Amino acid sequence: MQDRASITESTHTSDYLHWFRNSAPYINAHRGKTFVIMFEGEAMLHENFQHIIHDIALLHSLGIHLVLVYGARPQINLHLQAQQLSTPFHAHRRVTTREALPCVLGAVGSVRMQVEALLSMGLANSPMYGARIEVVSGNLVTAKPYGIHDGVDFQLTGEVRSVDADSMHRLLAQHNIVILGPTGYSTTGEVFNLLAEEVATRTAIALKADKLIFLGQQQGILNQQGKLLREINPNQLDDYILNMQQTNPIHALHLVGAKNAALNGVQRVHLLPFAYDGALIQELFTRDGVGSMVTDAHYEEVRMANIHDVGGLMSLLRPLEEQGILVYRSRERLENEINQFAVIERDGTILACAALYPIPHQANEIVSAEIACVAVHPGYRKSNRGSQILQFLEAQASEQGIQQLFVLTTRTAHWFLEHGFSAATVDDLPSARQALYNYQRNSLVFKKKIQ
Image (cartoon, rainbow, N blue to C red):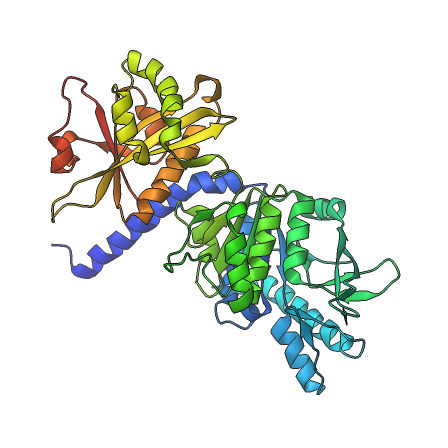
């Protein structure tokens, strides 16, 4: 008989193999892509930062082009204290006096050297053993004075004028990691103290980066109930920004950066906690991730349906019902069930739809729902709109506490398999749904666990 230790070890090995195999599509998808990763100065002081560096080295080894942007607020404060200096703040932005500038430059330089030193580690028995990482930095960010706001002269505090994207692309193509700090140089030779969040955002936009990642103190974006939002549209961030400006101004800067980046061509912006060991790896190589993602791609056109969409739904569904692909739904039924449907609409035309039906369950059954009526306009079937609406409903199901999804299909089995569903049987359905199963249609059953 297998002892408990060997069983546990076997289970851990199985879990590892499952994760590694399922991460392969993400590894392939990310190779050759450009990520900008910004971490606060507070992250450098946290015990988990060494793990973050190891994970950054791992991303680099997988062929991902990396630009690291670091903040240095607490380090600047320590340097100022050592010199018995202080700098005023206005609207959560430091006023950098000429007297304080050497402290700023000293702190920023020491942080950069610390990051470079950590990326140079190659000790045996360490995660970075054998890693050869070339790290470069330089005058890649041009700055200009922030000027006078509300009557306050910010002196040597600046803002980004431009980013030398061409030079960065060349450096990244040569397998270097580019490091940028919260400083920039003017055309007149002056040095300005910048917001690291602005440097990261403007750099991601200039590089047309595939991802911008903020590593902050908060896990991500929390709704009014304190629940983590896994995905959100940038246009939905304004209320969160306004609230955070009062309670957590640093997080508000991350949200402002996320909104600006997502609206200016950066495909995905991730907000992750720097204190969470493995946050980068889990976010990038698993389906559910660990933080919040801001994207203009998914929710841009997806919404819950309303009564005015019934006519458009009928036009989309009727041809598929006539072919026997979908079960017939009368107008009356559509009107009664309209709140279960999500749609993608453009210029008054419904391009895609799907419905989410919670399934009544008994005390011993997993909370489940059925995804049904997935349909895409014929002119858009080569797009990813079916995937968009499926992901939207999966998020809706997760918010409702649903743990498992089922689909019954006669024609699109492979499509659902490609989207993470696995084959099941009628016996796997909750008893309430089994009782309604139509044996004449003989639909195939698929299921998917969700968080």
